[in-house]
Length: 475
Image: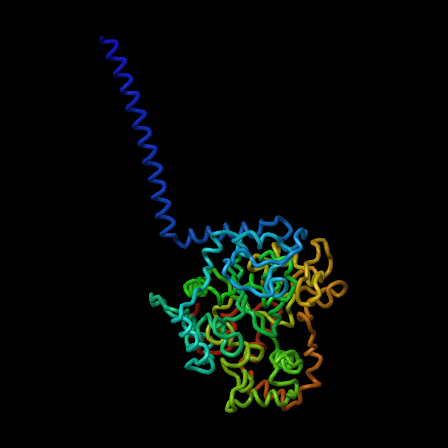
């Protein structure tokens, strides 16, 4: 009996220990789950930085050495990207709107994002009727017709309010204005392009090479039809700053780890380019191509005339192609927010320097091939990238006298040659009006930027533009 009792007791102890080990295992699993939930919920800036490092790794290594956009074409169709739900109406999928020659956008609901983490960090705006009303008021009828031109405003303090729109800079329209307009009233952030893995926002400015930068954005995303006309491609919209949720816009604007940069252009040259491309070429139907360059400048000089599609005076309601460059992305008020400002005349060197700073040159910039292989009948659509081993126009915005002579000068679909036409179109009086009356602040900034060989820094520029900035709290 005693031996039997001992065996039974031993069996009981064995059962007890096994049960205890199982309980401990369950507790450890539950504890790990709770800790994970707490860490995820209370993510600190350092953990957010780790998420960013993961995004950068996935984006840069996604296609190995060769970017996805240059990998062999094995799919010949165009599609509505899978990220759109079935109810999304998209016309002209085969040309302007669709994504072509790459099967992944058609099947992968993550595209154009590289990961779930990247997608979660860039939520898209879902404007309510109240938000649309606010944007109409603030963008189409702002309290101020022009920015105050302070160069160095103090940053707006976070009020903790759940604001319906992102007011990032005082006394200018909020972000998100493209929800209500793409012309006059389109706001300051219309062409701000987001490169999430690099934590980089490029502030594009119309008539300063914005088409090429939008091509580069799609190249970065992996679009194998990136040489096509980019402006109406639906996939690019997910990486436009103006399309993001207001909270994400505030986070990206206020986070010092995000780099903001812009390229500016000699103002008289830019204005002539806009006239030749948009007015003289009859792209505005109401003008019928009859307006002379002098008439054009006279209209812009007279803000008392009745407004006709942004043709009179210079204000937030002006067409963005001739709206002053310093109105873009808060440059006029928060120049210190821009780590880098470059100049179109040095586009090759400044673009390479900029992309090296943000870590995109080796992964994407040096691989970019200007132009492509036209497949469809429309010259703006269905253009495949050249194969990765092509030596034609290699390197984004780079210029080589032998093989790359036109890469930095040719605008998409047309070449205005506006610099060569300056003497033909400008009289001394017209040039004075542009320099002194229409674009004095553009000229002040451009002269400083054009003097240097390397990129300029916003903090240094603002101190040169206004003595008052030395007394301000800078970003």
